Picture 1 (spheres, rainbow, N blue to C red):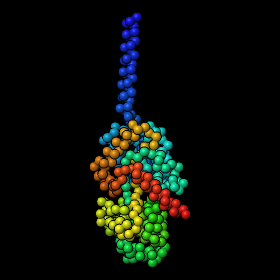
Picture 2: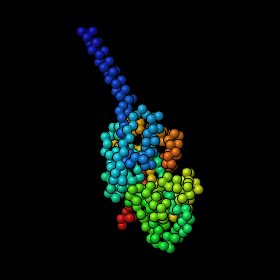
Picture 3: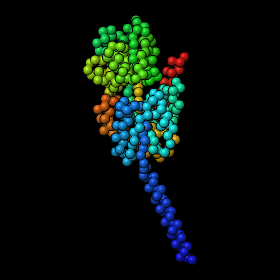
Picture 4: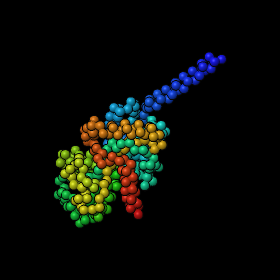
Length: 323
């Protein structure tokens, strides 16, 4: 009888040990299956390339097998909503863009930034006011403002689609400078906007520096000012709109941000946060962005603060438009 009790006790103890080891092993194995990474934009654009770039570098810090999945449509609302509504087990993550703090205020996105936990920015591109280099009417921001005031509504400023970040940039430029020009949105995106400027169909654009870099380098286009509060280390010779026009400071920038669904556990969040923070700071990723002509996020270390402040900014802008 005693031997039986000892045997049962031993079996019970071994069972507990194996159970503990099994659970520990399962925890250590995360992620143990493919990880879907949803990109809310079409293949080939800046967001898509930056996300795929950081995923390659993230493999240094995680054994995960990442499956990038593009879900474009509805100005990023489709892919963004898919991330928010994904099972919160850490096996579906993704990227959101600045439109996630714009579209909810115009009823075009069913979720807002609080549906996510931020990991790391992959790009952070400011808006720049750009003209044709051979435009004889103006060669700097002061002359641009003077011409616009003398010819209200005559200038055509091209942007990407309605309610996109570059569309909002044009509106803020217009209101902050107290000038009147006609905004021409190109729903097909920034590439067609730049082509229209080069072709002389519009007079200026407010897209990002990455969109106009090749033409600026070729001296076909010229950027007059960057729509930020401080000069960018990436464009130290480009004046800010604040210093050129002496207006109330504001910053307009497009960005892409790696995120998890908000309801993931702390353990899962901490894992991915560690992986993508390291990947975003890796020199290999920075070199990748440079090679791709993409703009590295600067001064955006506190993702939660950026989300909150940008959400408030664009909420105010949208409300002023709708009045």
